[in-house]
Length: 166
Image 1 (cartoon, rainbow, N blue to C red):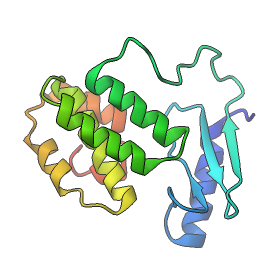
Image 2: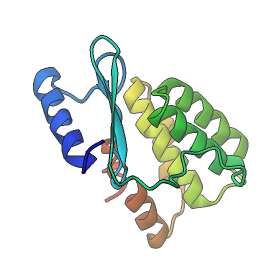
Image 3: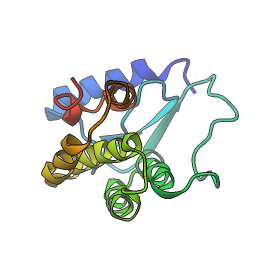
Image 4: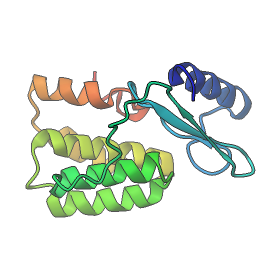
């Protein structure tokens, strides 16, 4: 338990960049992604030991996922988040989200589709897979300025999307 997780994450990311030349998000060692406002992240050492940094004042009622109220693409996005952030399984998150976009993408709102496609771009980048199909679909969405701003506020921290989210 720490008072603030962001400074710890920033320090470990800087050290990892210094030693490895990049931030390792898969394999050993690795660090989980830190989203702005998050209250935890995991650091995995070269032997596979995990250290979870949790903010001391993390809300007790924090929703970790699995809400029965979610359906379709929203449920798949939640599942992908759990697979990435708590199970450190980017490949399974990628597969689940790819399947969900095919199955539920046309029924979802444009913003929800954009968020799912942004996550697919980020996952593909992490896994070393092509991002072109997801970026092409993302560019084809006719989002309003407000929709684009909302997606940017949610996912603007993802490095592969900075060009798409000016």
